[in-house]
Image 1: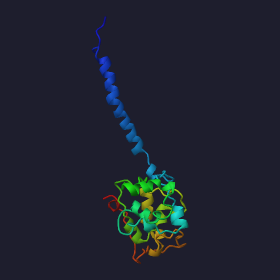
Image 2: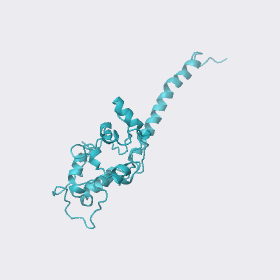
Image 3: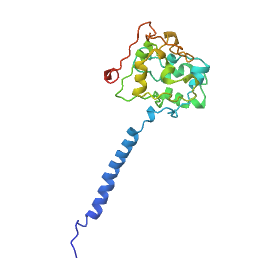
Length: 216
């Protein structure tokens, strides 16, 4: 009889090792490739379900609420703030305060915990984007976000890819408008944009096209 290649205890240890170490490690690798190998946050048509059925069509479209009432940092900060519960309760402490659709909002107001909104437009961490700089230059909300005033549930309309951004940086004139039209969803580009791109403040706009402009 030939001697055993492995001791008898290996019959129990090796399967346990494979199950306890290789199993979780393999799961982690597969999950990592799935999450980081997909581009759901960069895909046109991405439309996550939100904890509160907030309709931009109703608020921004039918009621005509200015984008900056909720996203009040777009003119002075790099990010467009997700409105805290207190902003929502400015109206909803009186308007439909008992609606079952606003249960998560009332819970947030009572507990102080923010509503767990799901981010739709999500640039990679290695890409720097400044909302205030674009608004100051005269880039309107609908240029990047689409006609949110017609969206019952917010959907990503543009790819937000490097190529898409560079196309605009190389020829910004069609995207620029006057300061008063930044939140005007009905604005359309001129049939013949000016040869020299003029920003909202009447100054020539020269967006960066080198790597350091967005990767800092």
